[in-house]
Amino acid sequence: MLKKPCGTFDETYEQDSALVRTGYRWTLLIFLLVFVFGIFPLLAGTYLLDVAVNLAIFIIAVLGLQIIVGFTGQVSMGHAAFMAVGAYMSAGLSYHLDWPFWLTLPCAALAAGVLGIVVAIPALKIRGFYISVTTLAAHFIIMWVILHGGGVTHGTSGLPANEITFFGLSFDNEIKFYYLAMGAVAAVVFLTNNLMRTRTGRSFIAVRDNDLAAEFMGINVFRTKVLAFFLSSMYAGMAGSLLAHYQGIITVEQFTLMDSIWMLGMLIIGGATITGAIMGVLFLKLLHQVVLFMAPWLGGIFPALEGSAVAGFVQIFFGVVILLFLVFEPRGLFHRWQVTLSTFRLWPFPY
Image 1: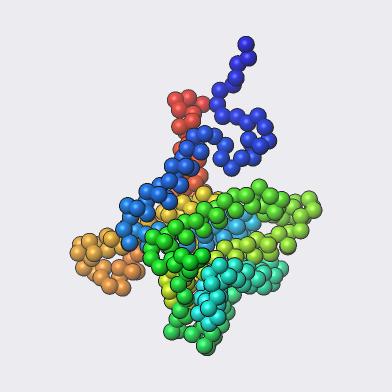
Image 2: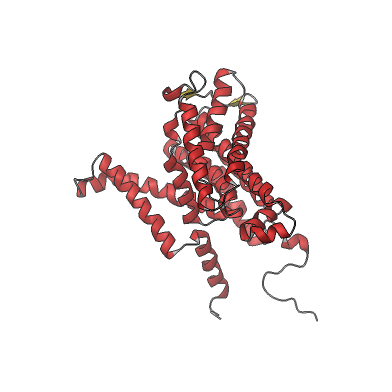
């Protein structure tokens, strides 16, 4: 009588390469989809739906940054600027030319991606710290162009974006936009997961681990890095497009340098993986909501923390959180989650 080994194991290549490998994970995935698309929007109010939409938009943007940082091992300090490019491109096409959203969205993503290539070509001629400085300079250049765009960008007054209509359906409230944003997140997560299973994704990882070894293996390192910047900027442009149409009007104040830094902080907190990027956005954004609710209580206890002092305290608090993660959990929440799962799989046999 043949005895089947216990545990989870793969017998075929298809099982080994599957995105969802076990029945338990399929159950969790189905439960998550039912909760996100069925239960939560029915129970949540307008405020929670607004928070969820902003979470979805930032998840798309940070997943784009993850392609550069986590997959390719580069650093970008101008990610918010590429979001601004996508936002202004989408809003401008809808406002000035009355284009529908299904045309403005891909144009915004493509415009941000092409600009990402323009920035990446000189940036990738150099290495390390200088890449981040180059992308930092790109941020200020892009913001200057937007501010001095005249009637095209409306400068400091803000550029309106038309309401999204798709096949006769108008996304004119939070719950409709929630479904659109969550559908976009699901598509982006699926595509990003599959990207890493392709030759291009494996090239990203090879360049990140050792670019010299990757070049000896026949990988065009420069082209791989430029492609990573292109895809990352496209994600940012898509997120910016969604943000523009959700807000209804956009200004340069919505895309600050601090936004780029906080997105890097989200990757530090969550971990430089796809799941880690999502966990980092959820942790930092939800923590921000908790601090906002606690601000009046803190103001009552500490009278000095009023007005602008509360905003300064929030920045200091988030900075301390990132420092604590760098010191005590440098590989992020996703690594801690993996360690926890491994512990439960081995318990009560710690060896």
